[in-house]
Image (cartoon, rainbow, N blue to C red; front, top):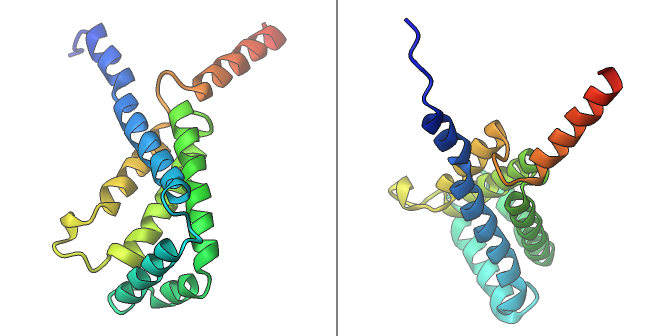
Length: 165
């Protein structure tokens, strides 16, 4: 037996990803900009705070070698993280290369979880896991509405129909 299609359900489903995209995009854009606007990765506070956090996390991390690598290169870690967060935030907000941006966002949050928040107990107090799974959701589904990806795809289809139509 086929259930009749309700157009309201498909409209709801179509826009379901928009709040997630806005939240992740704004949060990551803010996090990246904040690293530069509020003391910056090279400032004494930020550098010392990062080193202290990594040293504290070292023994509880399942990948202490990764924490050691970060400790050896705190400036690279600071700038790399800030730039990656800004790029991910902008791309996710614009819906441009959303799956690639979501993959980078998922990788960043996975690394943060494994290095800094792994020992958070109980695990659900840690903030990195919800971000990780939010990015995984975008990675699996794509951008949804109001996205440059959608415009590019429509243009691609239009050009294809002109070529083969």
